[in-house]
Image 1 (cartoon, rainbow, N blue to C red):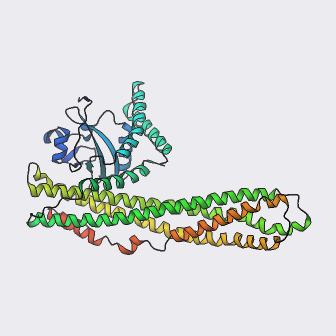
Image 2 (image 1 turned 120 degrees about the vertical axis):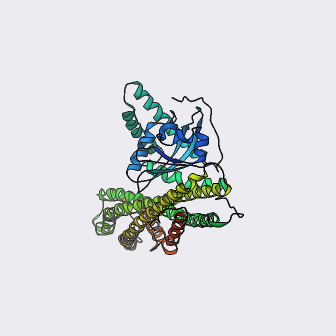
Image 3 (image 1 turned 180 degrees about the vertical axis):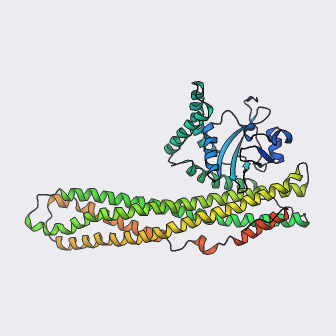
Length: 451
């Protein structure tokens, strides 16, 4: 058993790790970086369980969430503390995806967002301590990890995240962007000739196109967030309106002349229930739209990271060196994973589009409903013009007018934020991207992959 020495090993952003495992997590493939930094030999790694490098500081909850996510067919991303064969710790940002043909593929890099790593560590530490206390009390490792996963979810909610899925929606794009900035993209080898040069050129074009997709999807996810924020503002205004409606209903000290004039205000108050019903449906649609945009961006970030790894393998092949004979099979596996990520991105983007289109209908319906209280308020102002208002009503009028104005502004903002068709849908087509990935895979050998 390897014991931690307390030392930590650093490495450069260019040193990216690669491995594949079977369905049980047994290592099938690795790259030279993994071998070198883990301090295990090829023979010791291949055929060993991937948890051979697990550091005892890592909470079992993280791996419980990982397996639950992967076995549900979804990718997983996390910061991981690893333990090398010499007892030295090294930290990575790991992106793992299930493969349709079975097993899992992982690409890991140096953490490039220390602020996010620190945030995650503040969650990991108490979970790891809780699991250690449970095991000391006789609880099995598996059950301790389950209870740790529950605690992990609670701590993430305290950070404003609804689930681990929300966290990795943040981590993957942020880390991939920071990695690109740290290493300046995929290396060029202008002196290269032949098939490897052609493959590297294709990889550069795939990488650039994925970057354009990622930029589009960042705009889309930001827009979805602004929509959600605007609806929250509108929902708050309507809740305030319903409270005002309750106060209007309690007014009893009116002269007979004022009773007919209360009708527009009472009708306005009643509208809050109707509009809130529409808003609840709209909130659900916008949550789905936002999730689809964020998941699409995450899938593209993952694809970009895999493309970066393909480029690293090709540069190794061009430069020569030990272990390069393992590069071509790895490139093919990465290309398969790339196509799967593109497929998943399109699925999530379609979900976003459908939810956004339905949200547009809800926005139109809510706007129509909100026009009614605006008209009612105008009618009431006309009737009340020049009259001395009873104190019980006069104190409510400024509040009523403010709430109507805020609701109208929020609806105008929503109309602007929910376009009929997104820029991404209008301008991007993944067919060329798929064809390039398929060409790279074909050049790497084996049967063609579906595009």
